[in-house]
Image (cartoon, rainbow, N blue to C red; front, side, top):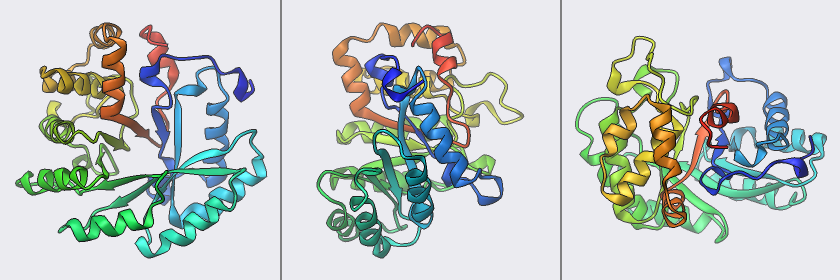
Length: 291
């Protein structure tokens, strides 16, 4: 099916799920050619409007652009550029992308924050990022110990006009944040009024009941859980129970009751959810009657 043949989907899910496959460890990562081909196929599928941006580390950007050029898509691929080689490499990367506007469009620049992230560093990020590109910053969550310094960093990021990012998975079990950590992150981002994005680890629409041996509070998170949790942040509801839920039908019913205004508020709160290596399938959401 051509990209023009994609069906319309509810605004809550439109362009929600980014493909972050290229952020996985190289030994388990599909080739750039496979990632680009799968992304374009997904974008042109019946539920293609669920597809968001393709996340590309700066170190893989030349390969990504070359593969997109070989595929010759009917419209540009929207990119999220991940700074993995230092901020100094960003101007050259942006120049490459902007000079190939028929193939790729930069929508987001994502950068990991230093441990002591402050206003000076955040202003430097803002200087590098064009006005029409969204700056996203990931304060690194501590794997153990007190999280208050991390939450303070999340607040500083939001207050300086950048969008904070939460990593929801990775190669280690500890890369999955606990329910309390996700709830605290959402509440801080919501209070700052600047929204947030999530990255990695979101392989399911709903949190799986079987956590593969992980403790209940540190099992993989679901995209629908995060959307309901974001709605409850906006309405001062019980955020943690939304994250814990494995009842897809109940979560779907709650989403179905959201007003048009509430849906806009949720997407302003949670702009994008990145998945990888296998993006969340639309079939899961369709099976719940949401698409």
